[in-house]
Length: 262
Image (cartoon, rainbow, N blue to C red; front, side, top):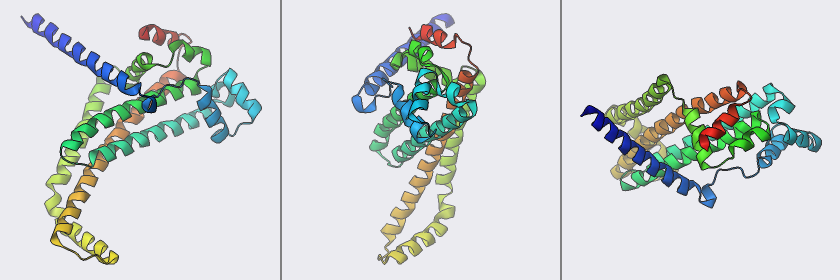
């Protein structure tokens, strides 16, 4: 009996994940949302000229090997750190904006937030491969939705401690938002004083409705900022985990990922 229930639950989970992957693949296949580097040299050229300050001849050398091999691990690590924080901040910003509205719109924006977060995971995973690996290695993987999902799962980690840490961060975010909303009555006085002074400086006639609306907006902004911070807090360890794996990768690691994705 118990085994039958477990099998049924597993089937439901597999069905739900297949629908999720189908929806994500279709969403990320839209031209404006596609995150696959069809030509990795595009990223290499941009970073080489803008961040690494390489000459045209040095750029051509990088294309034949890798950024880490040509420029050294220290410079590659700096570039990887820059790209990880860049994409983490983008994920944070979009989560913040999506968490601001209330009501029915907030549910639609949850989907936008999930898709955009996944986009940033995909982009940073490709960039880390381009930074640390020779082209022939990551070309075995082939940057597409299926292979990048495998890399994304690798970034999330399979250890129990990684799963617990991820859920704990979500819990911290929910708890912090609850505390902000519950303690709003204690902060109402200072917030009213702040808004009155701010509106007075602008020469706007102050009404009770404006004060209440301003307080509600400040609370929404505070909760949205917490949500954005949690996205950033979750994104960084994921990207750093892949970075560590690529730096310590065995020569056949990329082939192994390619087999998993096939």
